[in-house]
Length: 154
Image (cartoon, rainbow, N blue to C red; front, side, top):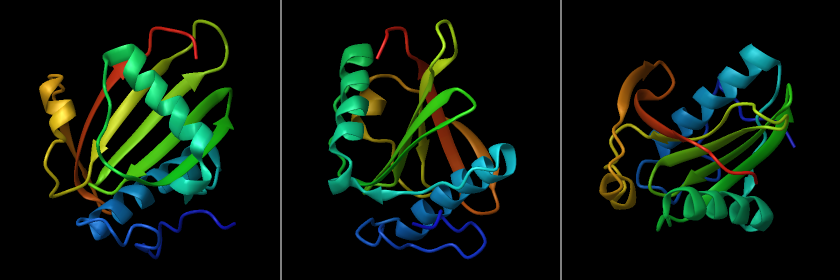
C-alpha cells in the first residue's frame, strides 16, 4: 500500500468529512513530516481495519483524561520509528489525533490533537479545557494543536 502523497494531496478515504480538503492537507502535512524527518512513508488504512489501534487510543484517552470522542474515525496508521510507536487516527469531524509512545522506559509519551482548518474545537476537548496553539502549514492552512503527557504504561 503506498504512503500518503504530500505532493498531490488527495481526499481519498476522507470524502465523508465536512472539511475533507483541509483534513487531507493535515494528513499530507503529517506524511511530509515523517518522510523528511525519518524517511518513513505514512500509510493509512480504513478505521474498520484497525480495531486494535482504535481500542488502544480509546483506552489511553479514557484512562488518562476521562475522554471519549464522539467523532467517527475514518483512517488509522500505526508504526514504530526510532523506538517510538506512533498511532494516528483521522476523524470525520477534521480531528487528527496521534499517540507518541516511546517504547523504552522513561521516554516521551503524549497524545497530540490537531484540528483541521475551519473545524470547531470538539465539545469533549473544549469541556476538558484544552487550549490550542496555531501554526501555519502550506499543505493544511492553519493548524490548531494541543497535547497532553501520557503518565501510565500502555
